[in-house]
Amino acid sequence: MDRNMHSNLYRLIISQLYYDGYSQMAASLSKMVNEDRPCPPSNKLLRYVTTAYQTENEQQEKGKSRGANEWHTSCLDMDFDADLLPSSPEPALYETIFITAHKDVCRACAFNNDGSLVATGSGDASIKIVDIDRVLSKEHMFSDVEVTQANAEFHPVIRTLYDHVDQVNCLAFHPREQILASGSKDCTLKFFDFAKSSVKRAFKTILEVEPVRCMAFDPLGDCILVGTEHSTLRLYVVDTLQCFVSPVPADQHQGPITDIQYTHTGRYFVSASKDGSIKLWDGVSCRCVNTFQRAHDGAEVCSAVFSKNSKYILSCGKDGVVKLWELCTNRCLMAYTCLGTSGQSRHRIQAAFNQNEDYVLFPEQHSGCLCSWDSRTCERKRVLPLGHTAPVRAFAHSPVQPAFITCSDDYRARYWYRKAITD
Image (tube, rainbow, N blue to C red; front, side):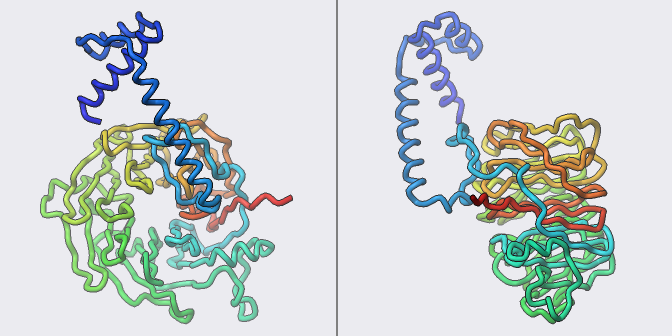
């Protein structure tokens, strides 16, 4: 809201207080907001609120009539649903239903857009692609047994890819095609066509000058953003591998880039860095349009993701705090803190929304548990022990269902799911 709207809002509040008989409180508020004009007693604010509630209730009834299966399409919007109660299951109720193991530390994971596939990457330079439908239909299997010719048709791990020579740091599915991109400590970005089961090697490679830390496809999959140990953010055209950077050096970060994500429209993208800042970029010109300096009090920013409506950015830092940033006001709207934690986090880890943004989730490294909060009220929920024997180093929540994956230095990736309650 602009300044005039704020002024009108304060006048309505003051008039309502006078109308309700709270003269002293009204006078005090007038002084606090420097409102010199007279505000006569009025019931106008109550009428406005009553009308708004009636409209909201009508919209909610229309939403219910469309069916309960559309719950996953909702998103966080503090302007309209600040009082909305969570409709999705609390994360503390999730259970491990599948475990896949690598031969070294597990450091990367990503879901595809429809949540039907998840990929994991490891220090052993391998990548696994897991079919979620097979996981859900084969819960009794639980662990990742060796794939044989006899069980390959039903095994949840549908592809194992090898083409890197060092640790896989990040993964991203193409939004429209059966292509998986991977970034590695070996300073390469590789593209795998996993449509054919026989394919094990990449069909295209980008050679970078520094280890690749993060990447993100644009919504159409025509371009891919790449962040490395270098401070310069690069944009590549997928077909030609032509590279673009901002023409203004001052736009760039001052340290390695830790996370990147596009909005769903591609109009903007966000980046996080070891320099402690979060930057908002124009998706067309690749120019930085806003910078949140010292977003986590100077600590390294580990992740930054947009809400579905692109109104907010959820970030976490090595200060162990998760923050919700409102873009229209350029301010931190909420800070989510874990109970009993102290000091800086040793390792970089991501915070995430659940599928309908009812909850904020964060794997806390000191306790080995998943912390979660009501995204709208900041209310801390029950913790979920994650069962790993080493720190969780990568985390992602499904975009469409109550499920997430955790990747750990214990060489394992655990797939968590909230099973439907049956009588």
